[in-house]
Length: 160
Ligand code: MG
Image 1: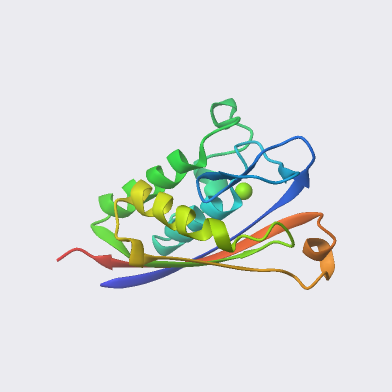
Image 2: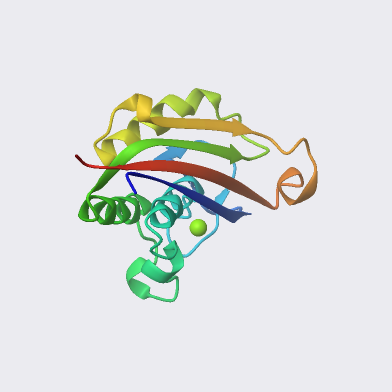
């Protein structure tokens, strides 16, 4: 098949004593996301989507959170490793479209920097990376600020 799609979903809980790292950049906020790695929920969802497009399992099988090697890991490295598998399979990125679901902070001012960072990690054009943000309208675990989630889709295409 010449084109394949992948979907990724990730959720992390908020923590009072962590920086907020999202899309490979640090965003000023009063709290951050908790996790074994740097808890970059956006990069995790995109990584999972790339692995899904290849039918190669998920981020947990490739980078287990029980492995001390990934404690505090820079999620950009995990994303880059997943994209190496895409290249290794003879594919390259068509596009990414991701939606961050987070009650606070307002993410709009940081979206350009996140897109640029992801485009650099993957060595793709900026217009191949779409990042959107919404809130959960104060409903549910996201609305109560217990956690935040990201959904991501990717399209990869066979190199000619
Ligand atoms: Mg995660």
